[in-house]
Image (cartoon, rainbow, N blue to C red; front, side, top):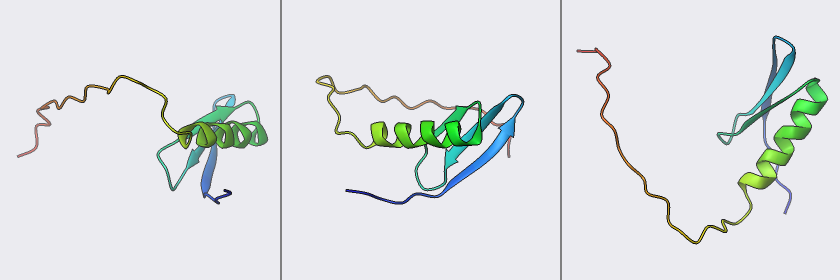
Length: 68
């Protein structure tokens, strides 16, 4: 199944960063085209069915942010 996602691309130093605006996935590349191609691959991997046989242990942490 094909889906369409929005992406933002910007330059950071020598690299281009591509970030999906619809899913929390990002990637980078030496060119804008490479960054987008890497993002496409990262999204495909993101949506692959999980193959882990061990359930990850999720923890919560408390952080003092100094806000009142």
